[in-house]
Amino acid sequence: MAGHFSLEPAPTDPVQTQYRSIKTAIPVPESIPLLESLDKYESRSMHGQLPIVWDRAEGFQVHDAWGNTWIDFTSTIFVTNSGHGNPRIRKALQAVLDKPLLHTYTYASKERADYLKYLIENTPAQFEKAFCLSAGTETTEVALKLMRLHGRLSKPSKIGIICIEGNWHGRTLGAQMMGYNPSQKEWIGYLDPHIYHIPFPYPWSDEAMADPAAFARKGLEKLLADKKLNADTDLCGFLLETFQGWGAVFYPPEFVQEIKRFCTQHGLLLSFDEMQAGFGRTGTLFGYMHYGVEPDLLCLGKGASSSLPLSIVLGSTKVMDLPDIGSMSSTHSANPMVCAAGKANLEALLEDGLIENSKNLGLVFHEALQSLQKKYPQHLRYVMGKGLLAALHFKSESGEALSSLCDRISLLCLHRGLIVVHTGRESIKLAPPLVITKEALLEGVSVLDSAIADAISGK
Ligand SMILES: Cc1ncc(COP(=O)(O)O)c(C=O)c1O
Image (cartoon, rainbow, N blue to C red; front, side, top):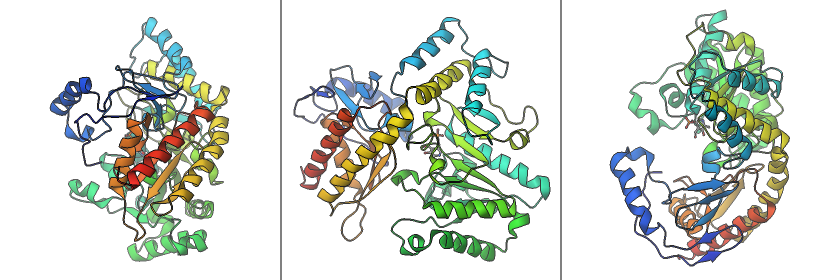
């Protein structure tokens, strides 16, 4: 997302439906001083976002202070899965706020004990313990540490970690080394020689699609041969992004099952980075559940609380207890407010049928999006995703990435009362809160339809 949308107000046609309202030019002229103030006082890296100022957000709608209302197809960025301002979360937060108990460091609190018990009781059996942090990138760093500590138990050389080309795991040092994008890690100046990557089985690769398990084996065998590695004594773990984030690209299950076999055979821990995939987004509690394998470690964040900063690593007692007391903790870990939000969020997902809604409405969503693909086949090449997660891939007939077309579509959607995830690449991502209704979902798709048509015709 290198560019910056113009801060010149653009006229819009008025919109008034049950779910959307657009009454002003965009950006709203009165919002410009605030946007300029952020440009002046905050680092540039935080900017480049669609030019609106959020004032209130509830359910699947976002409001500004000037009477505009949008249907949200972003959940901010895969965070507010149980809905913006979910009433269960607000009530739980209010109770902690009213005590008051705003911070406890690693001293015990009831909120933390209640949440972690509920979390472990409601996740698959191999996850026996949790460790909470604030950011997603911290959890992939923790997975790196735990996989290595575990490997070194059997041999000091057992520290190699395999990741996947094209995947992404956060912005801190270890996370960027495990991520693939070479230009993003140039700043580091060196690369960990024990972090390796094998090719991703993209759906447009005939070889990968013909036999995904053989494609995984080939990648692994080539890696072992090229780097002269002994799988039993030089490798400790595997980290997979549950789907490739920028384009919601899933693996064929056979590819992941082959990786699981390799991990089991050679004593590697299998970790999934579920940042975008977790907490109901793809129609199951966790995204890895589509692959028919059970991971050893899970890196979670974003939708974990639908609100305050909460990220989590889940694993077995044996692995999670490897670090000594004090060597894996953080000042803001498991804050009482955050834990109260995390518990209320998981209760909402499990007890209010939101994961079912993601699964069922996901079918309606993808059917409608497939119709768009058929309508604009020369630009919209693929629609990917599962549940209430989708990515639209825009490429020209010659295969050129249509990134500026995506910028234009995202902006036209904004002018018409729909917020989509602007990636800065050739994809537009869609992730409405899981509380969305069928009617609002289809209204959002119709806005997208009109924006694609007008962007293609140069409007
Ligand atoms: C797959 C994946 N991993 C890790 C991260 C990093 O999370 P955070 O931005 O909370 O550090 C993200 C964030 O977008 C992500 O999508």
